Image (cartoon, rainbow over all chains, first blue to last red; front, side):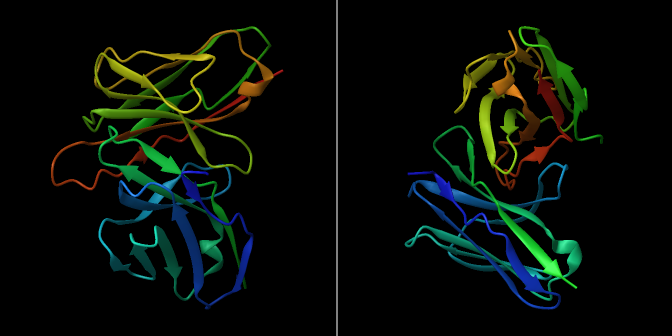
Length: 112
Length: 115
């Protein structure tokens, strides 16, 4: 079983719609959760972090965490063509020297 | 702050050659990491370091070596390059300071081809 699982996509949404990206993780000891955006040929950049159950909003982005279900999601409202990228989910275990585990990413295409 | 810098940006190696990928950060972060990313895949941890003089293996350490003599630098050494090491290599750093978000900052990457 993979540490972090994501649907590889591609996920296609029309401009202005809500994009919903999902991630599950296997270790209940995971405490910190991150969403990174990666444009083709570029390095990952952090867009959201979440540490407790519930929702966290930042502009058009909302991260949702459910530790009981071992599930974290990212919602992008009013999707723009510039949001087209691969989104990587990462989790960190507090007891393991700040090691991060990454999913393989979900490719998002926002169509004008 | 320059953040995390990596050199070179691109490199082509012949099978059996060796090289060192350089990584430097100016954020005084204790934790540093090396990842590889194969096409269409996520990041796989090669090695990491929790501070100067302390390193440990990640998921895919075979064929690589690291050292950490200073807080700022974390070079990755490839010995006897093989085609399976063709990949994009990312260096990252993060802080362990209480109250911080522990987020990782990534360098721009090194695209390596072994032929």
